[in-house]
Structure formats: C-alpha cells, structure tokens
Image (cartoon, rainbow, N blue to C red; front, side, top):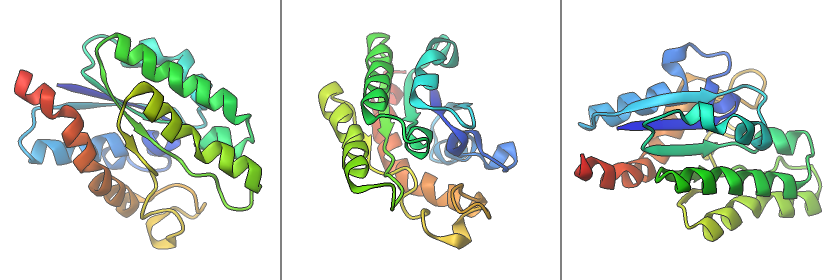
Length: 186
C-alpha cells in the first residue's frame, strides 16, 4: 500500500537526514508493525496550502492509497487570509477523495502572539475541513514537540530527530486506523 504525505518542511525533513524525516520514520514504524507499506515524502519546504494544491496531482501520482495532508504552517507564518487556506485544504481533500484515496488531515495551530482574531480564524480551519469533508483530523501535527527545545532544531520551529519520533508515535494510531481497511482489502 502507498501513503503519500503532502506537506511543507515539517514533512520534507528540514535540516534532517532523509531517513529521519517524518515519512521515513512513519514507514519504518508501520513496517515494524507488519504492514507492507511505502510512505512517499511529498514535502516541500516553504510550501503553503495553495502550493500543495497546485502540485497535488503530480505529488500523489498513480497508485496512492492514502494521503496525509500536513499543510498550513507557512500560510499562518505569512499571515495569509485563513479563507485561502481553508479553500485550498478543502480542495486538496475533495480531489483526493474523488480518486478514492483515503485522507488524514493533520492540523496546525497558530503561533501565539499572531493576534487573537487571526488565531481563532486559522485554528478553526482544520476542524471545519475535517467535518465538511468527513475525513479524520489529527488535531496538531506538532503536538508534544512545539515549545519543547530539546525536541526542536535551533530555529525553535522544526522538529529534530527525537521530535520526529514523538510526532510519529502520536499520529501513528490514526494512520493505522486510516489504512486498516486497505490492509484488509489487499
């Protein structure tokens, strides 16, 4: 089975060896649980949700069974209108579902101090897309890592190798649930 992770630098593995990037660690974790799976790294550092939408078709390619969408952090950091992020994420999910690809949406939380109104609008995007598109939501991709210097690179934003392990460990139950019907089908 083939899982594509469409994302930004958090997926791409910014400043990490390829084997330590989120998709590679997720693949090893799933394989160690007995799943015959390939996890494709479709992460591009600096990408926005609109950028992800623009490259969606070639990023997914042929034969994808599942898609994890990890986008939105750069939209927030650039102060993009949350409506743009909402529409792009909704379209990504809808297009994947139209191809019978199972989708897991990984949420993001606005950085503190960005402004209360913006935070509220941005933070509501992921639950709204999840609800409207009827796809599972992993609430915060950096859960357990954000704000933990020992789990981050020196920039205070990106996870280090230990941080990636935490992210994978926390999201793994939802990924296994996402692909379980595919495992029984194949």
